[in-house]
Length: 128
Image (tube, rainbow, N blue to C red):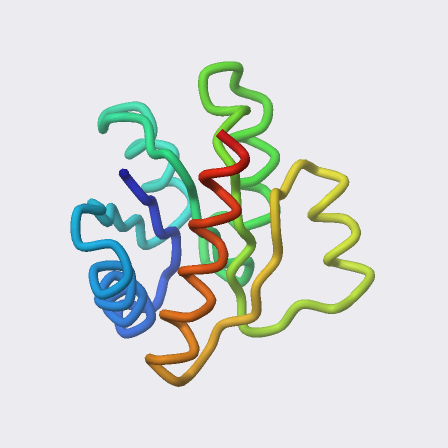
């Protein structure tokens, strides 16, 4: 499984990739530190099976990235999990309408993140 984590915070991406490896040792974690890099990564790397997308990023917001991914036929079926610190209810509804598969608030504890990833990856397996 290939997972793309799009987030501008290197501490958050390291934490995420460590948790992913703990939950799914065979998973490959790709990281893009902003939306423009994410789109370039999607063009140059193998297509990820699932994307975790932060909303608050410089250069290109997560919302803009979501829109660009869903516009592209090749990428439009990739499940995108909005993974952000602050998600207002009205924004969550908007992200779902734009095609987000799920919405998860960033978790500070490693065990909590691992537990959330287990649930998400299990849902993903059913989605395929």
